[in-house]
Length: 315
Ligand code: ADP
Ligand code: ASP
Ligand code: MG
Image (tube, rainbow, N blue to C red):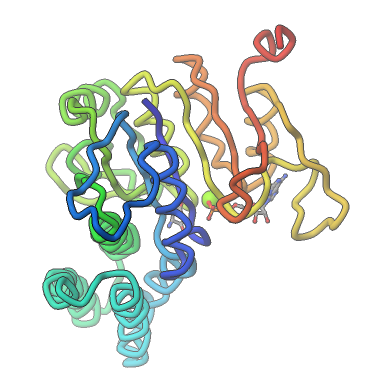
């Protein structure tokens, strides 16, 4: 079984989400359905897909919460734009007979978010707990939209609320995961050989209060799920070919690193290589699960394999 995590650019809008679903379909080995086939394909392997918020949405949510706390009515524009981006993706991804149902369902989420933001507006203050609740909507919304888009492509998949299976303390913004409790909950939840889809980054306390795992933390979620389920591989799908010698957006001659040890990858991440969140490495090391960093926009590329140094020298 494997974990596949897709980052913000990979799920930024409908056409990228379709590329993501192609990759998932390929991993399942089912291939696209012909128009005459109407039955949703059975998954052949257990796959857990972890998704980030659409790119820019987490930043927009933070802006939304801050504007509301300053009683700045411009928060309404930001709110509308967040809803607009998701509605647009739904219109492009979901077939017409399901559009209304999905729009109705997602409206409930928008209503919930609006309620929280109105409370921040009246309170004129933004607590770390409220900010986490607001930020969590990025992944709540993207994972729901993508799960419906997958179903629309005739694949069976189960939508999972990450907050029910990842438990943390109340260190809002950078919550510490209760590994024992979370691994047990995940092991119990992901029993069937099925395709599951969940949001990264978000979790909750034992009392059910929403928390987040720090910016860029969806990679960490993927690694936690991988370790909980003893996955054979954790794939981090992003917008560059893998881990490079430098940030390719800053250095045009950066080179792809095809293989790297856990230690070196962790060191690069702690030194600011944001291609992988630093906390991602530890859960994978403890279970010796290789992590592959791959490009959603060049899926044929080899990517980077992160594993332990002995394994590298054996190959
Ligand atoms: P995602 O949304 O998929 O999680 P991120 O933006 O968090 O993606 O991380 C990918 C980005 O990391 C790349 O677009 C790249 O600009 C940046 N980056 C920084 N350092 C490196 C590096 N050494 N190798 C590859 N990418 C890097
Ligand atoms: N959406 C969150 C962020 O922007 C988490 C992530 O993308 O990994 O930080
Ligand atoms: Mg990232």
